[in-house]
Image (tube, rainbow, N blue to C red; front, top):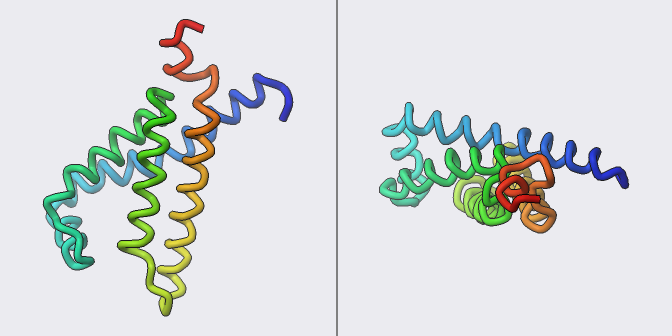
Length: 131
């Protein structure tokens, strides 16, 4: 796409689509706190990290949605996706888990692109810069 408005609309739609999963996941972890904590611990991840996970998913997802500190949150969510892929989904003998592993790797790639490209003109980042 060479038309700037289409690129900005594409970035907005991409941010909406990428953020929804994280906002929903973070919110659901609040409601299912003890179950999520037990799942994390069963995978060898300290359950005490759950508030950080919720923060990254919920606040990071909202920041991406609104285009606020987009580059930094996109980088944080890319790292989060890579860590989640490795810690929870890397099970070479389980095809379903490996599909989830590859999806997380793919989402991380999308966030890296967003970190480089920025949120576009339809974002709080753009509005706060005064441009």
